[in-house]
Amino acid sequence: MRALTFWKIVGIGGIVVNTIVITLLLSRPSHPPMHKDDIRVREKIADLLKFTPLQLEKYDNLIMKDKKQLRDLQKRRRLFFKNAMLENDLNKRKEAIDSLASIAFKLEHGRIQHFYNIQAICTPKQKVLFDDNKDEIYLWFQPMRRPMKKPGELKERPKHGPPHFRDDNMDMPPPPPPMDE
Image 1 (cartoon, rainbow, N blue to C red):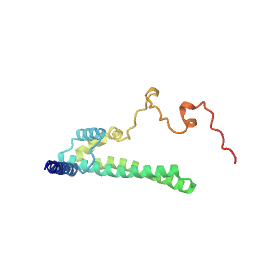
Image 2 (cartoon, one colour):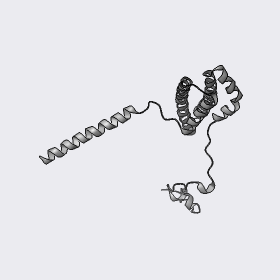
Image 3 (cartoon, rainbow, N blue to C red):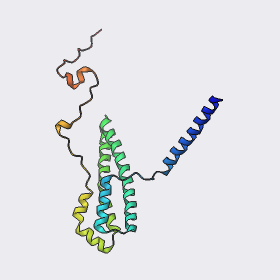
Image 4 (cartoon, one colour):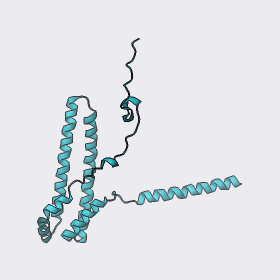
């Protein structure tokens, strides 16, 4: 009887936990959360141009659409970069490099188009503010660069592979050549 009660409790507990997990997965937002730098740029633009709630909604939709396109292009760029690095055939490597150049063009075009799409949702008064502050707004859309680390902050490289390939054994002679049979 005790074993039966134990398994009933375990079964009911499993059902409750699974229900909670499924509810949490289904209730999450359909779009990924915005990065804190993106939120700052959004707030700066909304404050500068004095967007109405309707304009903010249009701007948020614009951001989500452009972010999706950006993620897709970045995914393709990583794939073509990997192909260019691993490809031995010169013609296929050139094709991959050409694709990388095309994707870089599309990324820049998308960034500039986003800039003008913001202007398109502005009222005539806001367009004057936008034009007066174009240089500053454009700088907000520059790709973020990570600060370079100082030499003391660099992580130590992993030590794997044969001893003659590891950095800590650079003074070791290479292994002897294989013997002929």
